[in-house]
Image (cartoon, rainbow, N blue to C red; front, side, top):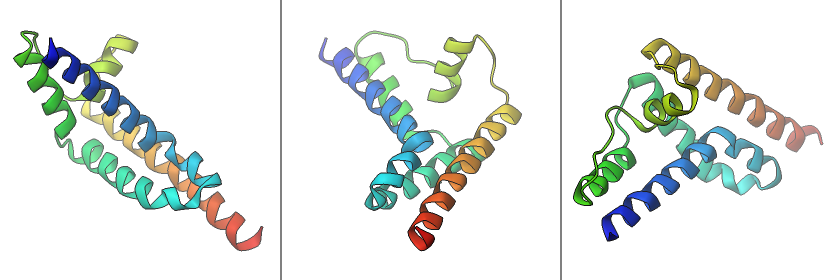
Length: 120
């Protein structure tokens, strides 16, 4: 029972981290100091998406699920849960597109933050 709780907690933490990677730049608009946390998170997201690296939180969640008697999931967090939501298979090419969108969106937000700081 405790392992399932740990797995669920890890899932929630993982989901929040992914949301922070994608949308954390919007928080930086109001709280610039968050950039010190957000930029390394975006860099990690970039590495995971473009180099197809395994995420340690995926490993940890699967580990807790297996200890709790459940089956873990194959692949990474994004592939598994986006596939569940969209019922689509994520190819490496689509994963690269997601990575480009992540970088483009955050680049736009940071350009706005720096523009506002310099001229606003």
